[in-house]
Image (tube, rainbow, N blue to C red; front, side, top):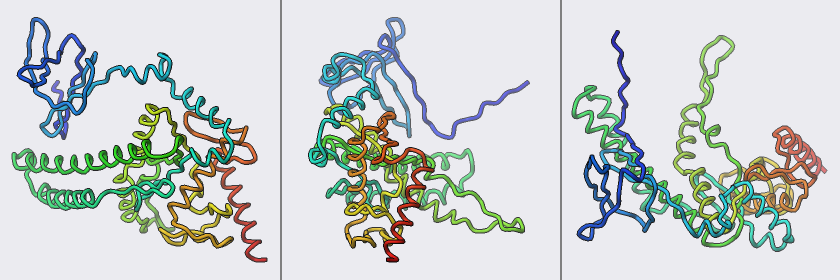
Length: 364
């Protein structure tokens, strides 16, 4: 009986080597990686190190787009000394910071807590600071999109298995990698500016990006015929969300904050864009446009992203001061009077009561 193995569509591959199968040496002022054991010497590889490093116990060699990359981890003495030589525990680290924050008053918390609002038009808005792709980055992203669109049309006309098709696939992978590198570069620079700039505690909304970027379900009418479900518009929104890299920014900021003794927490994301930072009034009419916020109750006008960042900050401070606050990883939730309930049902119920009360106030 013949069995066939499905061939991979890409040239990606990787191998994991332990310390007895590799060695770093410097020859002729060039750093080289020697691979192989005492009996079987495979050879040496020249590589470029982006930073100084210590001898690792294992390395990970990966191949992508015809290029080879080396990745590894090693112990950092600074990080070990900071945590008293004990194994780092994320939950204990968050609890330690929360306990320290509870000893502060509200005035002090206003100085050390930074609310961060993530969006599509402006990727990151932290207080009065906003972070967006530079003009050069936007130019390179749009240029890569044009090349990808052109190459996809050429790829559709190529014969499967031909050499020309393989070349087109490689060029496509290069342009996709350029876009990925730009997004990663933006996430690193933004997280570094935030952690080195101001604030000791950073607050994000807890966003489920995977759920937010799902395809819409097909719709049918009463006769069983498919009707428009705005799938094209949703695809454009999904692409814009994934292009910004919300999760990567928060991930990079979290590990960089740990090294500097700072902390990152998340809160419930319900109605942060509709709540007024001045009076707390929540209503959909407060934000009729993408960039402007105008409260229908007190008349407070502000940039929508800046208002949302202040709301996130104020909610986090209330949760810190609330004795009923619970900590799940780095997620702040509370069932107390001043906190926001973790369940969606409780949030919707409180929102309905707020909207009904606001309607009565507007009617009177």
